[in-house]
Amino acid sequence: MCQLLGMNCNTPTDIQFSFQGFSRRGGLTDHHADGWGIAFFEHSGVRVFLDDMPSAHSPVAAFVQAYPIKSENVIAHIRKATQGAVNLANVHPFQREMWGRYWIFAHNGNLENFAPPAGRFYQPVGQTDSEAAFCLLLETLRSRFDAMPTLEDFCQVVAEVTATIRQHGIFNFMLSNGDFLLAHCSTKLHYLVRQAPFAEAHLLDEDMSIDFNQVTTPNDRVAVIATLPLTDNETWTAFAEGELMLFRDGLPTTIAVPMPNGRDKMATSG
Amino acid sequence: MCQLLGMNCNTPTDIQFSFQGFSRRGGLTDHHADGWGIAFFEHSGVRVFLDDMPSAHSPVAAFVQAYPIKSENVIAHIRKATQGAVNLANVHPFQREMWGRYWIFAHNGNLENFAPPAGRFYQPVGQTDSEAAFCLLLETLRSRFDAMPTLEDFCQVVAEVTATIRQHGIFNFMLSNGDFLLAHCSTKLHYLVRQAPFAEAHLLDEDMSIDFNQVTTPNDRVAVIATLPLTDNETWTAFAEGELMLFRDGLPTTIAVPMPNGRDKMATSG
Image 1 (cartoon, rainbow over the protein chains, first blue to last red):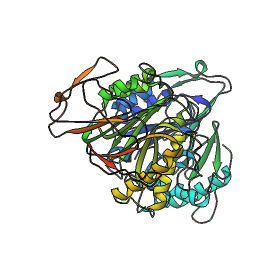
Image 2 (tube, one colour; image 1 turned 90 degrees about the horizontal axis):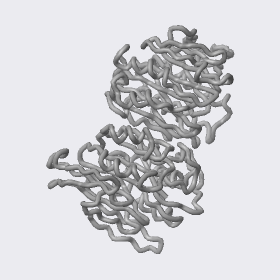
Image 3 (cartoon, rainbow over the protein chains, first blue to last red; image 1 turned 30 degrees about the vertical axis):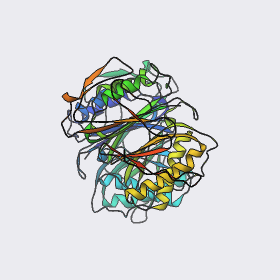
């Protein structure tokens, strides 16, 4: 399996503190050592750093930790391979263009007997179940809409496809186009929202603290989403199993996902 | 305008020496200071480093110079903006997936009155003429073929689209899927092939030499393609104006491009 890290903010923010702790789990404090990647949106542009080395020992990861890139939407992933060899084509996050925007996706889990037919618009390059799921998600959206629909319609189709895919196994994922970030929890995902009054945070994976009062302005709002909490002195909220959450400007909202038996989860605000 | 750098080899090779000289042209020895990018294929996987800072002063470029990434196909670009603001979405090279492979493209030139209709499969994210040309190229290929055709058929369609696009202006470009690299010269492009017996090379933009005998094996063959020669003691071959060249395993072959008046350039081997 793998671990996911995401960030969604109302102002461009660097992720160095969270990534510092997260990347140690790639071969140092945990065993997710089969590659890693991180994508930073800057408006509609995106830059993705990928490596098939363990993040704890990767020179690219060391560079990313040291170089502050300010972004409103970030998705990072450390890989423990379940399907697909350890090579660059199988490293998350994956990137595609749809409707003239870039889309970034990363997955934690394992999908069994999952072999969607080759898409007309999107096909996987590597061998992972994860990239196949991303392509199926985009293929369905692109087949239904010729341009970006309303966010409500968009989320509804993502929820539908998610309901289908997760019948194949564990499907924790994050998806972003730079405007918003969607996160789905099959089994394990946590989040917190940092906003005024800011406090000091201390990493779980390393004895390192930051006083967010020193690096923020009063209107900043930053949501951090991670497989497991990254700090030991803040309150992280666990996603419910099966919960799909939309983050915009650092604000989370739960999206209803259809249940296989027809019962919908109620939409609530988080 | 901009400058292009490409590499195509029969064995994974690092591009540090060439990139060292090339990146100085982004704000130090030349004025291409509106961002830069470089894409390294590793088999079907690809990693792209992008920055909207001048390459001569970019920490990401400094990292890429210091970190040897071995690749068989590399495309790099330093930008002097003609169309589209200076931001990440307008930085080359551009990346898309087609037929389950990643494609990388970079352009030097300026296309005027060039506004192809929105594609069904590919749409630009940024505002450059370059990304619009890349999307038109892929759109045409994807519309004609549902899977990768023969290399001959592939090159013929690229040649056709190139013949159309270059009527709009200067269209020097490089395109690769990790298996081969295509380079087209409207106005200015040079290449050389390094193979045994290897010799010492000295950069034009910096007093720096490398003895390729020390870092190669006798069977290595490396083609380097650049807008302007990068070394002052090697023989660079200028592309003919209008020449489209296919590089495979470090070996160049000229592809016939249809002429607007119906006369075809003859195919020759270089």
